[in-house]
Image 1 (cartoon, helix red, strand yellow):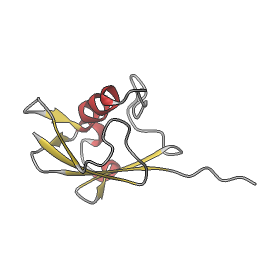
Image 2: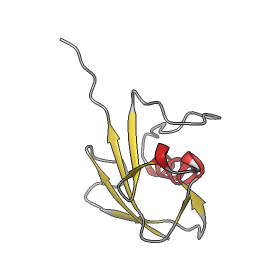
Image 3: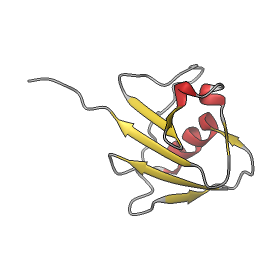
Image 4: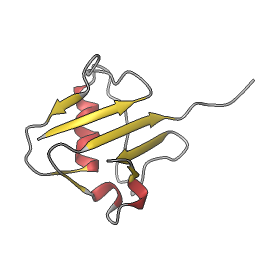
Length: 95
């Protein structure tokens, strides 16, 4: 399954790539984010273990332009070959 990725940061392990081929033929957004984390030399915890949602202070994730929270199954939304996932890290404010 090929998933296209856009991001506002360099996704560790995917530098200069705009898509990734996953070995699984069926996966959810949660599975994808967990597998993506394992591809990084230093794993990024996109999804905290057992969490029902991403931390909204850390991440915004869209599936084909739709915020994952607006998908009926949230993190358990089934992905399809060719889907576009946008991962955005939220900037911390401060002074």
